[in-house]
Amino acid sequence: MLNFNEFLENEDILTEGIHDKGIFKAFYLAGGPGSGKSWVAAKTLEGSGLKVVNSDIGFENYAKRAGLDLKQMGDFTKDETKLKDELRRRAKRGTETMGQQAVNGRLGLIIDSTARDADKIESAASGLRYLGYDTYMVFVNTTIEVALKRNEERPRSVPEPIVRESHRQIQNQIPRLIRMFGAKNFIEVHNNKYKDDINVKVYKEIRKMANSKITSQIAKDWIENEKALIRARNPSGKVDTGFFSRFRKRYF
Image (cartoon, rainbow, N blue to C red; front, side, top):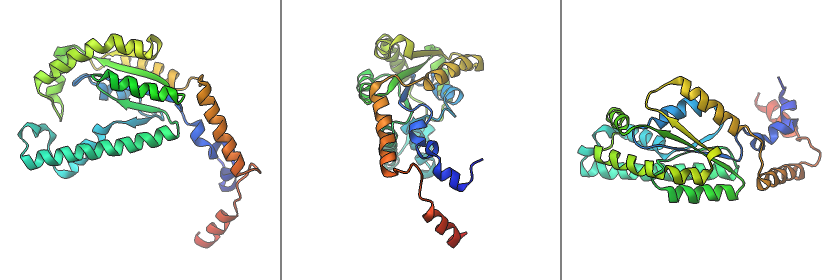
């Protein structure tokens, strides 16, 4: 284990951002209501070191703290609906800020989506590729019967006609999504039954992709530039630990 001074003088630690797992990798997670994509994500993506970009997480936390029961959205009063909409906007703003910070550091991303708006996905993915990212899609698919059953069991269920229309739209988008990301970067998970053996396979594929070598010259140039900036700020290659020594003597 490194001692305090060795930690401060270790270049690999000081440049941790450019050595993060999944740097310059972006995984889009898509699936309709009731597809079970949150379960698949928990089984295959958690612990990957990738940053999750999902406004639903923030929204559900805000709603819980505000005392809103999202199962009862159809029965909300006017004031409750107004509060719900404001919490949704707040969650989206927070998620956008977090996502932008991650992109600024070129960190690996998990971007949650439904795949209904393929134009929006294509625009965002193109922007990330322009920055040097490799982009992938993990598409979680189910039959309409399974989607309807799971939707009923969700804390935040969606009216049945919306589930049916969303499922139809998303199925129609699959060929376009494959063309958008390329067959090698498109992983389809058939999740009609929650089975860990399926997720083991997906887990291995995602880890392989996330840990693969960076191929984009844009990404390579960005990393070299970051290293050069670090060296320019610290030509000796070591950190002046005097401040930290004085800090420790005074406060510890």
